[in-house]
Length: 462
Image 1 (spheres, rainbow, N blue to C red):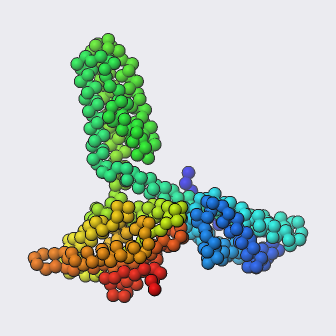
Image 2: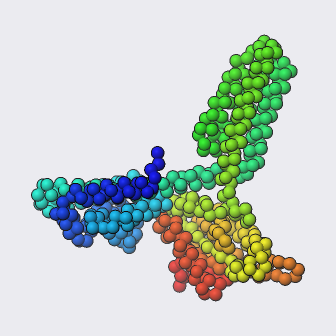
């Protein structure tokens, strides 16, 4: 059962306040007195421990730790230990933000739990050096442990919600890639099921031997459902029901002998039962395909390019591949120059023609391994795989030249010259795809600021 977000926030706030109130002022003062010099060795130990883990190294590098992550973890520990004087609303919101980032990057939740366990272990060792009264030591250790657990719980709750959405998008992309045209596949399989039923009725009506009647499982539809259909559809209940119906049809048919089929009443019972169950299967199958058709919206209807829905799935996968194979890729953001002026002056039909024209050029200009998205409005995104930013820049220059050489004609002999501004950014090893997009967007802004019809990179090339 999912917990209402507002209810959960109120619950966690109440329990955190309760923890603060049950902890003595002396223990709070002790924890808040820990300085950066006290906590820094804990952080050093954490990163040394995590960088020795093969799984953790996919998300960490010694340079990242030095440049940014050391200070980030140190600040988090101090915030949690000083939470008795903090604005808990803001503190909880910050934990939720971190959980969302972890999910977006794809950090396994067990790595987070393992890392926090290491921090707590180091913190306990540090507090024991204070040689304090046992009761005070217990009080301080209890607050450290439960406060960190509470913070991690908030992160995990946010992580789970984001991860659930991410998993659905990954599955939708899998479905989208398996069945390129859902409507065609739907008609093909419904026709295959109907074709089996028609042959079955003919065989029964013409007195064929029971042993000569093909089972539904052995039919074209049955084979498709067993080897593809069951794996394509995510709705387990419907798939289970179709499987049960298919099996029950075959079992019912196999229970009939040739002598039984020869009896009119028995023959009628066989035909009617099979017909009813096939109709039920047809209804369930249509429902599944209707649900699957929603996933086919992975393509922008105007340009026929991928829409931005699958950007997180694809970028997460490319980041994982790049990190595992020590390769790189480039994200390019493209924006049509003065598109609003085209729309306002010539109308939306002309604007649509401009979008289609540029989309066609982008699609024909990239490699089959690259991805082209309609990002939104007049903006596009290209993901160039296993390439340097210099190589990607050469492709972009060629694309810009093609676009400039292919005007559109709104009517008569009048033509509209099209140009694009482009921002590029090469993957730099950071696992957060949104950070990469923001950098490419920043480069795009620079290209527009510097006169349009040009490309810029992030960071700027010397």
